[in-house]
Length: 136
Image (cartoon, rainbow, N blue to C red; front, side):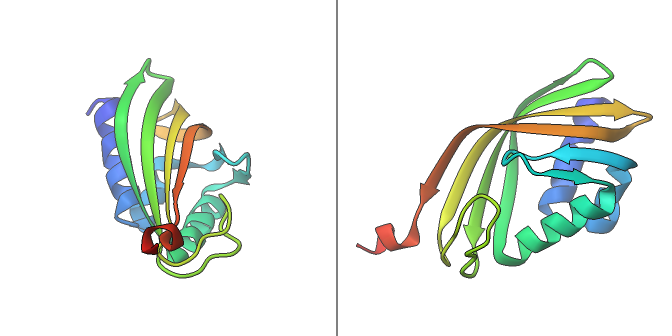
C-alpha cells in the first residue's frame, strides 16, 4: 500500500472516530503541533485531545491533495467542525451549538517504520459560520 493510500485510510479512521485503530498510525513517542500551535506528546495525549473535541463538535476531514517522499507526507486538508453543543472552551475559539468552522490547513507528517512520528499543521484559511447569523 502506498503512503498516500495509507494516509487516506488514516483520515477515514480519524473521521470515523475509531480511536483503537487510530493509535496504530502513531509512534508511541509521536509529537503533534496542531494548527492552533498546541503541542501534544504521545499517542494517548493526541487521542484524549480529539476525544474531547469530538465530544462537542462533529469533525470531518477531506484530503485536497497529498504527496510523499517516503519520509515526509505533505497534505492539504479541509476540515469542517459543527458544534453539537455550546463549547466556550473549544480550542479554535468559542462555539455555540450549530456553529460551523471551516479550516483549510497544510500538514506535514514525518514517517518512520510506517507510523507517524511527528505531525505539524499550519492553518491557511479559517472561516466561521455562526448559527446566530443564519437565524437572522
